[in-house]
Length: 555
Image (cartoon, rainbow, N blue to C red; front, side, top):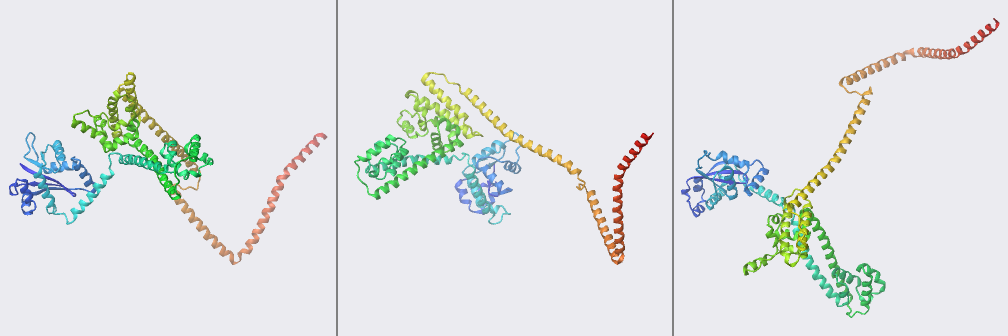
C-alpha cells in the first residue's frame, strides 16, 4: 500500500510520497538512523505537491485549525486534488500519514481517506522537517525560519488574547487573595491584641471585633492619658456610649504595665497596618462581587459570590466547572476524604465546598446529603447557563434559588415543590420579555432621531424655494455665462466713459458745464410751476363754484 505524508509547515501544506521503504527499513529504529542521510532519505521520500499560505493571517487560521484537529476547506481541496482518486465501491490503495491523530480522524470522516499516525510515520515526518528546505526549491535560506518565528509569535499572542473563560482568571486570583488576607488579618489582629494587652489587658474583654480593637489601640495610645473628655470620640469609634464609658473606667483601674513611647509607636504602626489590610479586604470583596456578577451571575445569585468563586477556582475555570457533572461538583473540595473513604472502604463524603452555602446549614442533619445533591444539581445548571449563554442574566439563578427554597420547605413541612420544567418555562418567558423591552427602548431613540431628520429635511425644502426667488443666485451654467457677458459690457462702458473724459479735457467741458447749469435751473423752475399747478386747481374750482352760485341768485 502506497504511503503519502502530510506535512504542515509555517509556509504551507506539503504532500510527500514514500516509495521503497525497504531501502531505509521498515523498523522505527532503522528509519531513525537513516533519516539523517539525505541521499538515502531523498530516494525514498519525494515531494508531490506544495500549497503555500496566502498571508500570515491565513497561516494563523490554518495553524489553529490543525491544532484543534479540524480540516479546513483549503486542506480538503489540496488533498482531493493531489491524492489518487478512488472509485466508488472500491477500497483505496494508499494511506495518508499525519502527525495529529485528531486531524487524521476528521479527514477520514469527511473524505473517507484512510489515515495513520504512529511512530513510523512520525519518524518519516521528522526527516521531512529536517530536510524540508532542500525539498522546496523556491525557498531562500532564512525564509522558513522567519515564517516559523512570525507564526509562533502570532499563534502565542492569539492564544493569550483569546480566553474562552471570560476572564475568570481575575476571579480565581481574587478569591485566592481574599482567603490569604483573611488568614493574615486574623493572625495580625491576634498579635495586636497580645501586644497591646501588656499595656491595657481589660480592653480585650470589652471589644471583641479585631478591626475596632486595632482602631482603639491606635487612638488610645497611652491609657494614662485617657479621660472623660475623649468619650465622644470613643463613642464615634465604638458606636455605643456605654462601652466608651466602660473603656474609660477600665483605663483608670487597669492592671497593665507602662510602655515606653517607642514601644507605643510600634504598636500604633502595626495597628494601622492591620486597619489598612482590613479596609483593602473590604474593597477586594466588593471587586469580587462585581466580577462574579459579570462572569457568573446565575451561579452567584444561586449560591453566593464567595462560594461560587471558590468552585470556579477549584475547577480551574468556569468552562471546566460547566463540564463537571453534578456528582463531581457535589464533592468538589473533598478529594482527600473521598480517596480516603475509597481506600478504607468507608462512607464517601456528602459535600465539599458547597457545604459553606447557607442552604445546607439550614437543612436538618438527616437531609443534609439530599440537600447537597439537589444544590449541586442546580449549581451545575447555573454554571452551564453562565458559560454558554450569549447574554448575562440573573433570572435563571433566581428561579433556581426559589426551587432550592421550595425543596427545603418540602423536607421540613412537606409542601410539594414545583416541577423543574414549569420553572424553566417561566424563566425563559421572563428573559424573552426582558429582551423585547430592551429592543423597544432602543427603538424609541431611533424614532426620535428619524423625526429630527424629517424636520431638518422639511426645513431644507422650505429654504430651497426662497433661494429660487432670489434673482442673483446662479444655479445653472447658462446663468454663469450671462454673468460673464454682463461683466464684458460693463468693461466696454468704462472704456467709453474714459474716452469721453479725454475729449472733455480739450475745452468742451466749460460750455457743457454752463449748459448743464442752465438745464438744471430750467428743471427747477419747471418743478416749481408743476407744484403751483397742482395747488391752483382747487382754488379755481372754489371761485367757479362761487360765480355759479351768484349767477343763480341773480336769476
